Length: 380
Image (cartoon, rainbow, N blue to C red; front, side, top):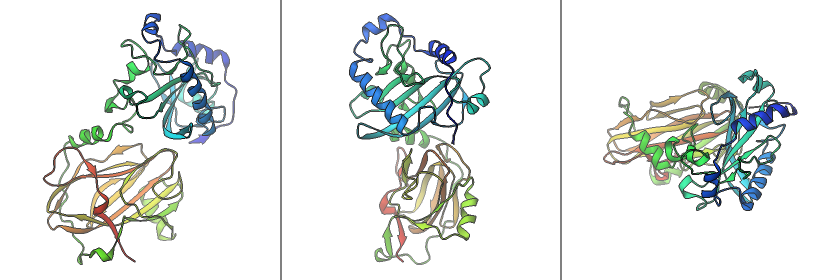
């Protein structure tokens, strides 16, 4: 991300765009859903939500921006989307901020250069507490003007809260069709884990990796410490090879062991590094395959990662990328026991994800996290 200098928005463009993309909810629908959104509690929460967004520089004239991209109705011609973790009223959860841009001669380049000039509306999804709206994954919805004031529908109802389940219009009615059952179209990052892993598990596995070598001398329990060892390198990396090359001449900083590779963060720290951005990591240890047979492995990552087990390359996704799964990798284990585990990973900026899944031989269903008891490092 880059931080652009503050610029005052063009009020006529903003007003025109706001009118063009405002959610069109019929008066009859409002009558049916009079208690769904725009209530005093909804408006008050939306105001506190805006202040928290400003504090994290997700909105406002000097907000951090991401790469603009082409949009579509009912949002702007050009969009910028950010998602991270946000604290509101002492509680932290996921927030998604979509900035909607429009106007004459607008382009990706013009928005990147002058991000406040064409800004017409900001739509926000914030995950509320369990039970807030279970049918819509507990999302709170709000639509703001560039100055933080709530926009309203034609009936004058503030667009904040559980905005419209009407089958013909409204936030919830549209987003309910997003894949992954998470009400998010851009990715499945917030989909329920069982839905995501079941979907990935249904994919066709690649060729089976064979020839993995167990440790020549199998360690006893007294030789092992829980979790994988990790050394961090604080620098911006763009490729996995850059992490390895940098580590040759830099000692790095040892971090707390990683018990389970189940990390997905927004503005929070990357793994156990204590840093939220520009982190490289060499993760080393051993992994236990308790039985012979074919294990199916998969990695979910953001950004680059490379994993070798028992001297064999399992997954390589070396560049900068958004959250995504590796292909399913069948791994043949001939001899049960402990195997070497070598992973290199980096997170450049914004969100970070690193999750390791498997499906042991003889088991069915979706992938599951490799459990803590299967990961360790040798005692020094």
